[in-house]
Image 1: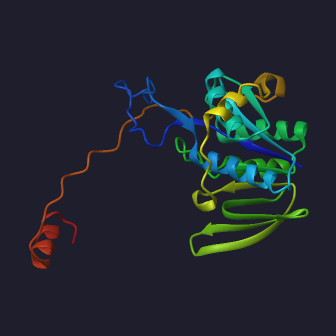
Image 2: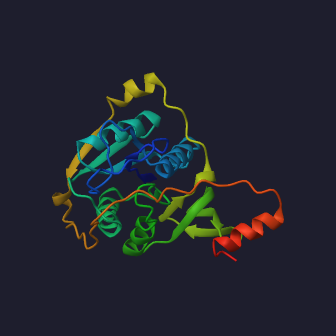
Image 3: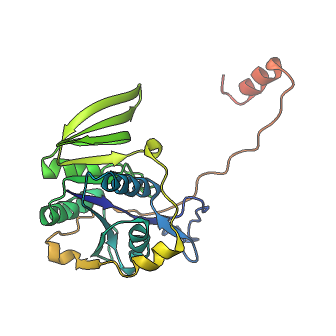
Amino acid sequence: MKILVGIKRVVDFNVRIRVKSDGSGVDTDGVKMSINPFDEIALEQALRIREAGQAEEVIVVSLGGNECQQQLRTGLAMGADRAIQVDTAESLQPLTIARVFLKLVEKEQPGLVILGKQAIDGDNSQTGQMLASLWGRPQATFASGLELSGNTATVIREVDAGLETIEVDLPAVITVDLRLNEPRFVKLPDIMKAKRKPLDVIPMSDLGVASENDLQYSQYEPPAVREKGIMVEDAAQLVAELKNRGLV
């Protein structure tokens, strides 16, 4: 069985985001870029499944220009067998990304597609669900536990009321949450070996998928600066302060 894993190049989660002075976007000059944390967890889970003898090949996929090859090489250093870069200079939206993944699914015929539940830049949480619908296969989202048995997957999902356990038939799409696992540390020898692993570059136009960016971003701005808090002596002063601010 093959496992297809999507990874996205994003600003590292430890970096404080800065908006450009003209409000046209996020300033990425000299900023550390990394694999989206949820996608890194998805890849770790795919590698564990392969190491348990339940899959033969793990393929990492990223959409973007040559800059995303850095993250694909990191995925190969973690242990992925192959990498695919869908070459495009456009900023793609979830439905277009799902259509691209569908073309790769048709080409590679994986038994499982594992994605992060969302990217930390757009926070859309839509690609996995859209892919499952286009593919016509089951989906299990927000997975915090995953076990395979034959042609089925048992998934523990994080929902508002707590945890939900469901079983889906394979092939299927799984999107993962933070508590599923802790990704492995990439060692220098593995980084060197990753340079010899295959990385295929496929122009997005070759897949026959057109970009449909119906949503346009007109302006970016940072969150409003929070007011400095004050210390109150007792509950009476707290209530009085809340009244002064029109909050009670």
